[in-house]
Length: 311
Image 1 (tube, rainbow, N blue to C red):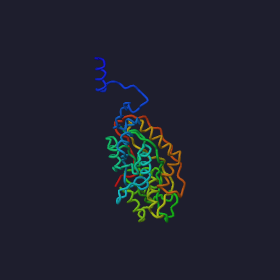
Image 2: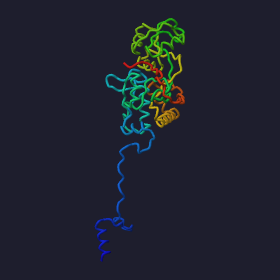
Image 3: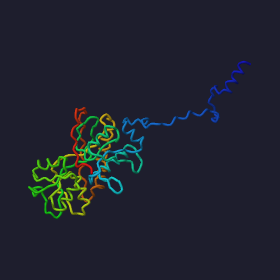
Image 4: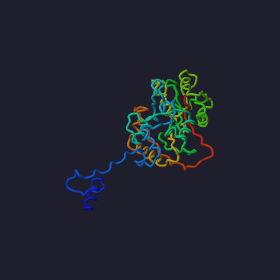
């Protein structure tokens, strides 16, 4: 009696395990898995990518005043240019499905890099022409090859840089363009403005004979001039644009390099280029990724050059 009473009590209390049998309806269902609360459970290996996925968008630090590269429409607030194309491609490579997966935060080059250090943005682009590591920042790329070139009026008759000897050529101040223009012995008659748009205005008004800047930007200006302006294609330098990333996130760098390499090889990079600069001419050969320099912590940040400061 005592044994039967104990069994009955166990059944009532639900502590007696049930034997498996053909009547599955009597089996205890398996425990329900707790919902995941963090994308780190996916095991991406990159805290930056996990943060981007969890937030559902990529927050990109950039500039807003470079046509053909990164330009914000003052009416709609929308961004356009090659950096926009590459930013969306990165977001999709990281698994974001939203049709508009990138949010842009525009600032000066110095502030942009500081916002990456502080974690206010996930990545930075915007005519960054260095791959030398800085405190807490590394660089991946180049994702776009650029060269300092010359923009002239289409009716000027100018076809070579030699025709600009001693003629006034406009550059954006504090971008390094003036020094490179003089080093290439194009002209010593350099006019500096604080904005690319003012150089274009001076060119259209005949106050200067050319505007010298990165060809990616000059093609942007030429593309909106209705044929009035053209890029000479003299390529005074050989440079590239890079993506700024948190230096400690090595897995992020690995995945970005893999994404860029795939885009170079499968034709998607060429499609992005055509979407920005047109398809009247074949897209150039994609750049070759530069091995990342050994990351150190220099006492002072290395100088980062950009084409022009934001408005």
